[in-house]
Length: 380
Image (cartoon, rainbow, N blue to C red; front, top):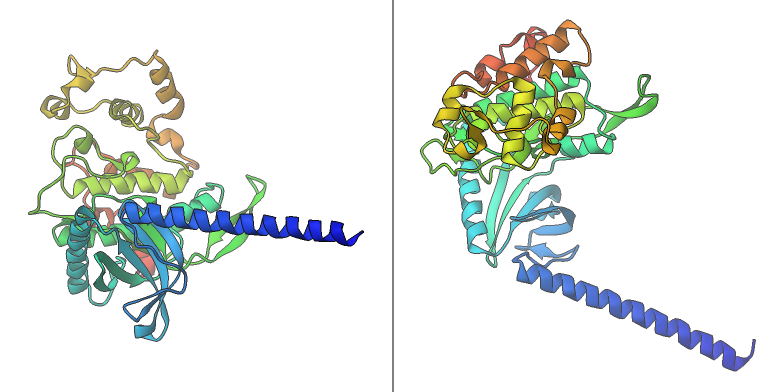
């Protein structure tokens, strides 16, 4: 190869490198501009906030802002999670309400017995409210997803359910409704797992080693005396009284837990829909007709005709619901006694009438939890 050809190739290579660097710089800048426009804090790995919190990486992002993993040099380099709220008034106001709830939890549970995530500190960083928490691991949803949506074993569901019921019962005792219970808001303390061969599925599956969980995200938690928003809860876990705008209280959390336990057991969502009337149709397919009292009291009469859900089972939507949903007991994976106990508990949690829905104090005394109560397990 001649000298001129070599120089030409070298020049082409350098031009390509410069172009890549320019693109990278441009993309980085546009991301920064997007963050600034949307109120996110602009940061890089290695940045230190308040001369104390060294950012390692981003753990997650939501409408509220971002959660980052940090080294807390004020705690000897301990790893923590830092929730960085957007620099926007409405999100700051929501964060202040969440801090109020977290402070109440810390006051009422100083020994951390009730499985709620613990706030360590909070501070204001150039308009961004930042809340530090103990660093947790994968959510129960993310673990399920990483396991190809293979269900949790019933004995592990029992351990997890006991902790969830105890955590939310603790909130209810302190005049709080969580309002956004879902598998994404229940995190494992440690998500290490073992691989176990599943003979039925003929594949290896992940089996969580430690079922200890923590309840997170108190951004929409509401005290009994506070204003109650009309719409609460993530769609799939929303109670019928919320959809029908009948008012809500602690029992709406119990409904959400029933939906969560079903998802742990089956590996898929009980009510996979994004439409209110379709959601009600799915409920009726699973649990039978809605009570007349709830229909007559509802502000959403557009969903009904002559005291019944206005729903055509022969329509495309009707056939979809029929294909996706069946009576609850038909989802049993085994006819063993423990499985029937589990479904009895779910049925009581998914009772239409909030006043008849099982309380979490009563749920924890249900026969499904008897093996834990007899073994003296601390989870329940």
